[in-house]
Amino acid sequence: MKKSLHTTAILALAGIALVARPAFSQTLPTNIDDVVLGFQATSGTGATTDYEIDLGKVTQFLSGGTYATGSGIQIVNTIGTNSSGNIANDLASIYGASWATDSGLNYGLAGSVFNGHTAVDGLAPNTLFASRAETIAGTQSTPWTRQSSSNQASTAQPMNGMLTGGHGYASGNLNSPNQTLSLNSSIAVIQATSEANSWASYMPGGFNNSVGGVAFNTFSGGIQGNLAGGTANAVVDFYELAPGSGNATLVGAFDMTSAGQLQFSTNPADFAASTVPEPSTYAGLLGLATLGFVALRRRNQANA
Image (cartoon, rainbow, N blue to C red; front, top):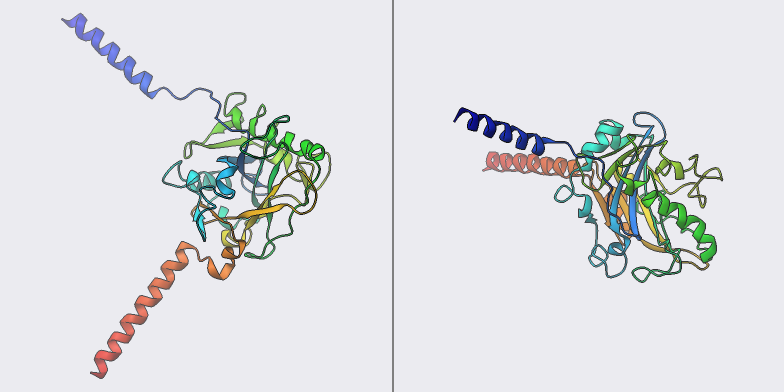
């Protein structure tokens, strides 16, 4: 009997150990035409660390897609608190509690269709997607310029490397201890800027750029917006560059809230500073309205 109990106890402890065992190295699933949201600190806290989130297929933001069918500003739920965790916890942990107004913190979006000579989801090979910061929130930036398919291939390839290459997003924590999976979001990776295909390596000044002051060897001035003026003022437009000539097509615009939520609208004007109060602003306005109502009621009672 004692032997039986002893054996049972050992098996129970073994079961507990298996349940509590930490996750080992793993890769992350991606699609060829996924779009990545990346964060980079050029100075201050977290300057040696990138933060990348795979938002999924870019088609969800294109005509007929999930976020392009409605009107006004929409929360991108693929990274919202109701689906894949609250990334604000990661941003605060990596870049500090004041990340939402950090002059050294930047963010942008990028993706491509680099798949030989095969179209994907109706998108031609070597189609590029890249953000561009607005100078004034709510006012569209100057569109990027489209190029031939052969020229854009030299940009699509490193974009694909950033997403799926070794020590890129998709490699998760498989290849290096300098790249870890987020504990707050199942679709986020925390990586050292020194990683071979890190987000920062393709930004201006990054070691994967052969030309200074550009992103992915193509986009002059970079594709990121800066959070110095606060999240509501850090709006980035998102463009589709189908191979060809002329201006890129505006897909829409993104911004971040101080709560770490990504917002999207097909109309950049929706992000004009006067029309996009932070949640704390709404609370303040409600408080003022309440005080005004109380004061008016007391005055009416006094005059009664």
